Image (cartoon, one colour):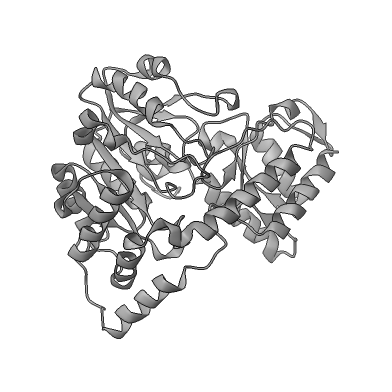
Length: 395
């Protein structure tokens, strides 16, 4: 008798980024010298001023259940941050703190989407967007882009993708996996399309906002007539090197915030008390406090682009944000390399893992089937060695 799992879980794909990371760990355990460029995790330690705030919270005996939607002091601090960095005026009743931005996104989708609703995903997109839509029994519709236009969609594409059942669109700038940043004008042009469709809600995922290289991101909710339809998602994992602390949050219409709190109250309840107390210090800190990390990421980006640019067959652009490159490797499709026929990006990514001992992620997982994603949130030495191995295999 087969295991009687629900249709819901059987329909849910495994996260390709986590699957590749698990495969890399498995090979490492077996004695292989694997360099992993698959996870989007900064290799920096959490800054001391944040760690000290957590230690202080422990010493002050914070150990009880927290409010489902987060400590009031943290929600007030998030309001200050939204005003300071994004010109967004939220009040604490519009803020919900969750166990990571992923839970924030899942909450929003669960409270807004019904079975049969359509969700628009400008591609490339983070792997969990489509899976979260699937969990809600909604349909996701990809809006394709390519490296030639820096992985951006156009207003005409957006208009063409909208259906009578469209309920949401997910924007992500700076983008994972491409590093793309939409300018204010580009967002305003897309908003003009959405003005004609007032029943569509916008989820704006801004988790990488502070990791940009001179091109400051613009918050979609700052467009005047989009504010009441936009839910802004952010968190501390990327810019503050706090991936394991699991702090994400939203700002949005109060009725949506209340619904997310209701949902969260039946799933996880309130987020970790110590992490929340430390998060107050983090969100109130001036972004210049973590600029040293951003500067280092830019140096690594430039080095990676230079080294990859010396490998025939890699088509590159220059991503202005996040810490990924998304090269187009479709020139290798149909070729036999090291005895393996490369049919697609998944084959290419597996080739690099098995022959070069370098873990990447297939672009198919992100709606970018001609590409692979490499994270440069790794040490300079690891990046240099990884690209050297890749070049040796492909040569």
